[in-house]
Structure formats: C-alpha cells, structure tokens
Length: 259
Length: 259
Image (tube, rainbow over all chains, first blue to last red; front, side, top):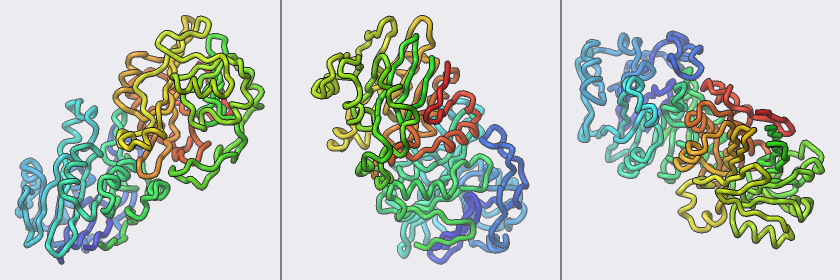
C-alpha cells in the first residue's frame, strides 16, 4: 500500500490497487477562523496549503469520511467532489448530511462493508475527547461521534486508520482484535480549552507502539490546524528518545510512505 | 511561603518560618552516568550545576526525602548533610537506609507528623510509573515506593508536594482531599525505555489544574536529568496555549516563587 500524506487528516491511500481519499479538507490556507474555544484559536485554518493539485485527490476511486467536522469534510470538499463518487461514512446522521449536500453514492460502514474485494470495516471504541469532556452535554454534542477504518485484503497488509480518538482501553482492545500491520494515528494533540486533548499526542503514539510492537505507525493530523499542539519534530524527538523511532513514520505533507 | 527551585526536585522551602530542604541531590554537574534503560541514557547527571552555594542548603532546619532514588538522595547529600539533621522519610526501609548511612534524627512520616507547629503529612495514591511498568517485578522493585508531602500551618497556605508520581485517579482523590492552595509537581516527564513516563508531563500538569482550578502549581524536576523529556519552555507554551498559564509557575534553578 501507498499512503500519501496530504494535509491534516487528508490522505490519499492506494490499497489493493484502489485509490482512497481519506477525510478531505480541501480549502486553501487560511480559509477558516480557528476553532472557537480551542488552543491558539487566533490562528486561521488550514495553516498550510495543499501540497498537490486538488484534481489528484478528486480522481480517487472512493472517499472515506470518518466524521463530518470541518477539518475532515469541509465546504470545499462538498463543492469539488463528484456527487456520484462512492463515499463511506460512519452512521445514518453523517449519511443524511452528505445526502442533503447532493451526494448519491453513500455507504454506511458496518462490520461487513466492502469496496470490490477490499474489506472496509469501521473501528470501535474511539472517543473524540476525554470522558470529562463528554460529561458536558454541549461539548459531547460538539465533539460527537467519530470512527476509524480498517482495510484488509488477501494481497495487502492490514491497515488500521484510528481516526479522531484519544488513547483509551477500548482503542487498545480494538487494535488487539484487528492486529493491524500498519496503523495511521491522528497524533496532532488537538486541545479544547479547559478540557485537554481530543486526539492523540506523543504519549498515545507510544502507547499504540507498546500495544502493537510489530506494527508500523504513521502519524498524521499534524501542523495544519490551530489547536494541534504537537509538531512533527517534537514527535520525532520523542519516539527516538524512547527508542521507538523505527516503528513510527511522520510523513511531511506530500510525502508517501509504502508498506 | 517561599519556594526556591534549586535543581531537579531539590528545593529549599521556607514555610511558617522554617527552612526545609526537599530531596537533596547535591553532586556537581556530570557526576553520574545517565540512568540505564531510560531515555537519553548517554547524557550524564546532573546536567547542570547547583545554582547556589551548597552551604545554603545544608543550613536548612530539616530535610524531606520523598524516596531514595539517586536523583532525590545522592551520595553527596549523604556525605554533606549533618548526621543530626532532622530528616523526614516515607517508610521503614528508607529510614533503615539512612540510619545505616549514619543519620540519627529520622522521622517516618505518618498522617500526624509535625515539625514544631507545622503538620507534615505524607501524600497517598502516588505511583512512580504506569501500572504496566509495575506489572514487571524487576521494574516495580526498581521504581519502588515514593511519596509526596503536605505542609499545613494556621498562618500558611496548604502546600502539596506531589513527589515522583504519574497522574492517576488516586492522586486526584488525594488532591481533592487535601485541597491545597499550592501544588509542587515533578513535571519533567522522565521516561523508562519501553514503559513510558514515570513522573508527570505537561498533560498531567493540566489535569492537576482541572482538578484544582484555584490552586497555584509549581513545576519542578525538569531539565536536570537524562531521562526528563519536557523542557520548561515547552511546558510554558503548553499551559499558555491552554489558557492555564496564570496557574503555573516554572521557576528556573535558583529562582524563588512566593505564595
């Protein structure tokens, strides 16, 4: 498989010969204000431009939308992606939203979803923030539900895209169940003021490594949004200091890693 | 109270008119090899020299030793501190060790220990590493038991020195019980290879702030040892980005904070 880091959580993945566009946020640099109530909200998003011509992304065979926060599915994606493109979503409400936006080829992922002969299974156990954050009803609604995706195919290694989640026991159990060879981690350490992280940070990357010492980890969702506090350089120093550097790729925007 | 950051966890604290020397590690820069099996073990300890004349520290009225790891109680402390100095320790085995080193005025802290009219209570619930680390018998023995100390006096704010512990529910409960006004946190994020952090890092400082929003936090145990991965600058950026900067002091070695 080829995993091309595009920007933030947007990746273009070639898996068993098919090209999947993950979590498209396609706006030019600085289009949106920072997320209100999050760290460094005075910084505009995205902080960087796309590293490739957007047409390269629109040519993908299918799209995966792990959830519909604006850094994973933005107005530019809505306008640019072909309405008939196969799009995989996590649940009824995200399907309804995309249907209202004119998309006609929607699949809600289950435990048995496929694209051709590729299995595309939704992850379980993720949570897009701490229990403390989800205890506040407004924040629980705002953070909402998010998922990841597990790709498998007889000719490919198993790929686990964790999606927007913090590290927690349920994620450990889901990783243990799927035993992926490659794990994509949203490791930008995004923070909500007063509630801490809502996605993984460096220590969580290390926890995933401890859980699956043989897996190759790919860090993404970094250095593109106001509230993401972990830099690629800091993560590299951290995993190297913990002698886990060989297990962790941290591709630059536009860079491809191959497994 | 005055809290003077000396180096690593060593602090000189004036509380209700008495001077307490906390966790004396008194060796010159570079005396010891890095802790084997920990992050960046090729760096020698301590990484910096004492910022004051050692005699200033030896003149303290009493000494608190939260545990006897070499970065809290080292051979230089053993040789330099007067054998009759009042020293407070956490348990029988640390008392036995110090007795064997010739110290004669030892007190094992309980829930009712005093120095004059100052109450000096041992904290509960700390753990010097993760459950995963303590599940390995050799590592559990090496990490061992550690404590913190709570100072209280009618004329002073309550001071909670957390000691070498990670953030965990039991620490949250102990903080909740004591409701300290000032909390000293060993926040250098020391790491054992293969097992992660054994003391607090930036996210744990934030957790303590969430637990006790009115308390003033003082970060210590930073930038002096090979395995401590969090810098003062990174912690400052982190707490500021989380709009918690006013609650957190990060004194330089030799700097005094007053509460």
